[in-house]
Length: 472
Ligand code: SF4
Ligand code: SF4
Figure 1 (cartoon, protein in one colour):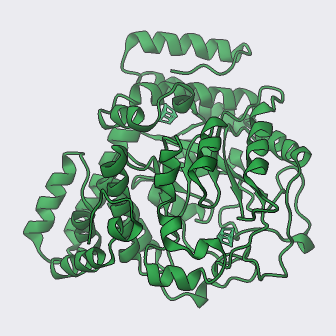
Figure 2: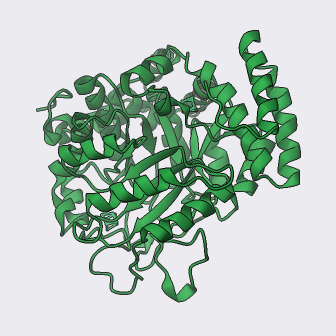
Figure 3: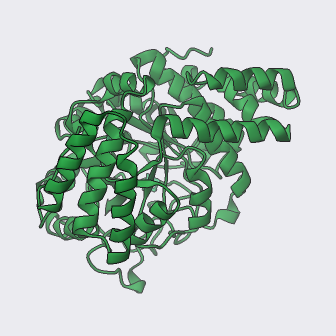
């Protein structure tokens, strides 16, 4: 029984509803009138439901597909301008009791080097990340109640926030750890985390159970209902994601949008972010062992359709994707990317010795953060290190309201310029700095309010003189 308001996983992610949606989309893939009417609705910038969006995903009318891509680009411009928010992952521990068949951290893998960072090692990693210029981290850890209990995660968050090295600071810690209890989510909320991110991996229950044969993660309902518990525990911003390549992408696409609709229906606020990782090669994982890999074209189409379906939800692409692929999807609505990432446990402060491979997946984009920042600016984007919202209490429905009315842009754009200026002063190579300074000057003209522009100019001067951490 499909019910977006239900608290039961199998009711808000209803298999029959997804199957019906896919059949409906297939039956209408050449229905130009219907597809055009959905595109018209998407132009109102209020989003689409899972069924409408799936029709666009399945559409086989070339000119209409091109129209969806242009609309995604337009929506990206309207809601996010030319800003791209930067972040880096920090792997704390790869001990894990689960048996996920697509991840090299699964408990049966005896080859991979198991590591867990001590608080001193975390300090070193965070200093290295600060020295690159990062302000926003996503911490990652396997599920292991003995090695990685919630107390370890909380202590690590405290350590990360406490480190002030030169002008560096990590101002927002997003957390990507296993599904847990309301009580533990409450502790994470109290620790001042940004977004709680949990990937569903696949919404297809039967496949989910096969892909997670052992460990607590085997429980589909407990995993799928985790975001609800996070919100009940006081975490305002949650992130969704699936691992494309495990199940058929159309199923996952409908599923993730139903999940977004559920959060909106039950809590009045949709997901803060949606991540779109694709399965990658790793220690004992071969993507060719899985049947549902997707091409770059399909990947781009998924990104475009997510953008038009949930305009106000941030979209994240990691270094799983190559430079070329990232460039392609930046146009279509991606709003956050990682840069200079290491997917091993440790590795930022000192390179990991080859014989000690602890990485979760092979990185496709190996460039440094400085190279990524320069590249973004050359493409016409403003790399942003902004973390203002949750520090200003703009979270959950308050944030979404500002987003939906596009008022948030009055903060995002000046904050992007000021945090970029900090980056240029403290970390950029001379070449990157020169490009960035010119970009900031050009972008000042795009600050709509004269009053705000004057404040930004004044603050940019202060940043050049050594002051830090201004924000709107
Ligand atoms: S995906 Fe997460 S839960 Fe599964 S094996 Fe990897 S680290 Fe463990
Ligand atoms: S102002 Fe808020 S929404 Fe905009 S970039 Fe900063 S943190 Fe993100």
